[in-house]
Amino acid sequence: DIVMTQSPDSLAVSLGERATITCKSSQSVLHSSNNKNYLAWYQQKPGQPPKLLIYWASSRHSGVPDRFSGSGSGTDFTLSISSLQAEDVAVYFCQQYYDTPSFGGGTKVEIK
Amino acid sequence: EVKLVESGGGLVQPGGSLRLSCAAFGFTFNTYAMSWVRQAPGKGLEWVSDIADSDKSTFYADSVKGRFTISRDNSKSMLYLQMSSLRAEDTAIYYCAKDYLPAAVMKSHAYDLWGRGTMVTVSS
Image (cartoon, rainbow over all chains, first blue to last red; front, side):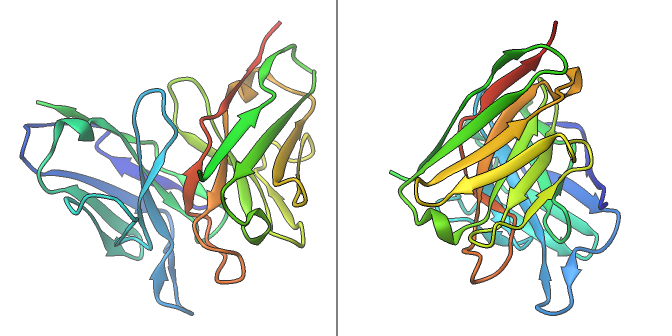
């Protein structure tokens, strides 16, 4: 099974500043047949289900603000929020779907 | 409106059984693989099981294999999870989730639609 490790566990960022979350997979999630990284990012607010932000590691889902961006390949990935807004306070999860799906432990983003 | 609505959760004793349901609305249900994902209170997300769009191939996490059974009724746009031999560690919110891409395009268990979940509590 592929283990996903996120860091940090929590992050406090000032409004308007950049937030960066990293995610590492225990093996590559880059599929050689189509050159796609099978990696997604989700946002979860209290009392709500997760919401898809990013798929294929860097493709923004419909309706997601462009301040959210994903990058990386192979085993190392990053979710960036370029200018943190109050509504971005949430827990963020990475997920690989290269193999049996598995999620990172989550990163809680708060306002400093 | 495109949505998923889970039901069937509740309090059950260890060793008991429960059947969860998920009703799908607003999309062509029989063209997407579907999954169950759970979240223990205050914890992270755990994939539980998934089922293919039409051929009904099924997959399970090791933690539930042999105890849970996923199924679907495409004629009713319904997804199910039959849970038996329940344990305290099965206590969680259970979400049903839809694959982002139709199965005919590509197998892709990134989930673009989630229900609000149904709570399962296993306790004596």
